[in-house]
Image 1 (tube, rainbow, N blue to C red):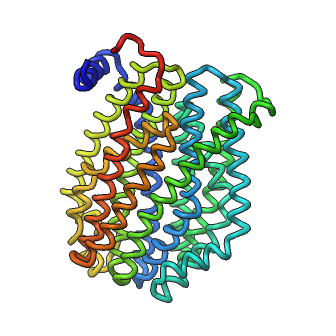
Image 2 (tube, rainbow, N blue to C red):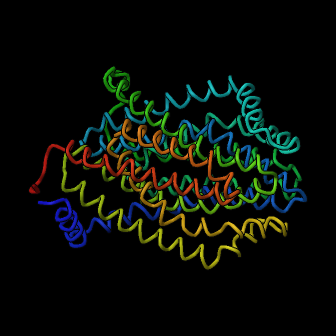
Image 3 (cartoon, one colour):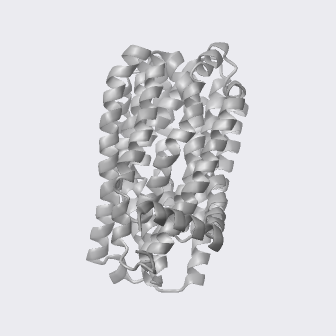
Length: 455
């Protein structure tokens, strides 16, 4: 059969047999939980945006960007755990299900202490690279010095949430995420608006919420483990082969994540070089992209769990069905984002700030935000597929190639088009991410040995 025929048959079979229902049942709690993350970022921006100086918005943007390196660089704790847990579930190995969680938590705690030990050189180096206005740097440093103490809880939550998503306990993950980010929002408003603690209040709210969420997640995971069964086996947890595979996948995802964070940080750095107004306006616009990313990641996470389960069970038909179903649904949601941004974009900008100059400047660049969902959806969806299959080397290589093209665009287009050039470069980056992964997708199907009836 041709590839087109296979895809058509997979789509028809998916509609009949209900993988769309499975995708939706896994996706909607994850979408809701993911959307609490940019909601928190939006509240941070809005709270700062109603203070009298745009430097507060810029400082939180710079501080959050630094933590993109500090924390998101270790996002492999979540992404790698999703794939390993899903494959252990697909194979029915309950001892390995426990071992996957234990390995992730051990790695997370160890890395957190390394982060705390290196906090001073990280802060000084990051602020030197940003080279923003003096007031922005001062406020961003205060934000960093407070939030960094949440590192142990943050990395533990990455591991716990990755395990919950891989095991398809998405409603539990929803409870944890809503609790963390809901508490964070409440503390944000209290610390900043009532107590007047400024950027330190925003950072402290985040750290406290992470610790509270970690304790809740541990309690809920313990209940799931009782139902699953199996045993904690030290020899299994510390198995040399499993540790090497864990290291390989985590290393590749780490490098891939650092490259992606560099790409987004380059946008912040380039914005800062164009002035405080551009920096603050792009920080507002990035909230739109963040809402998009976290919403589409709901389908990507569902795809990761089902792809991992299919790979663990070595079922090629199940793999194709979940990929087709999840991609169709993600594309529909992306179109919905475009419609919302096109119709309500200016109104949303007004919610972020009451500074007239920022409102006007931000609205001038909404065209890129409106186009972004339809250009970005494919990269998010392919990320989910490759994470579930633990094809980390391909993800690393695709990201490095995409970032190289993005850097080339950033080096040329802003000089010609100003801030429009920055956003055009971002769109080129998103499309490149999708294309560099799409050409490698057939490797995943070929690696699944058992083909239950397809040629």
